[in-house]
Image (cartoon, rainbow, N blue to C red):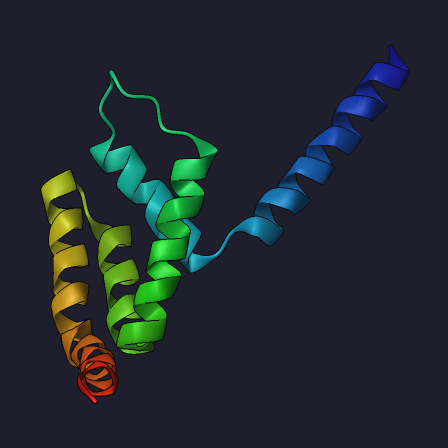
Length: 112
């Protein structure tokens, strides 16, 4: 019985460390969006979470840190799915100048 208790304690500590190390602001925002906006009839997967995190990182690259950080803070305080979606839309709007700059670079190269 003692061995089982020790094994459970070790597994619990390992899981806690793994969860803490793997937790990023982007991942937390995606998890919160999933909690608020999940459809009870549709199962989300780990690949959905990874895809969300990748999209947030891409938005950070294109639009800068400030809009994404504001969106993450906004999502963290959101109480409903529409409110959280508003946070995402606001971040997209705030990141638009950076994205348009990248679009213009590509357009210019393509038009030559």
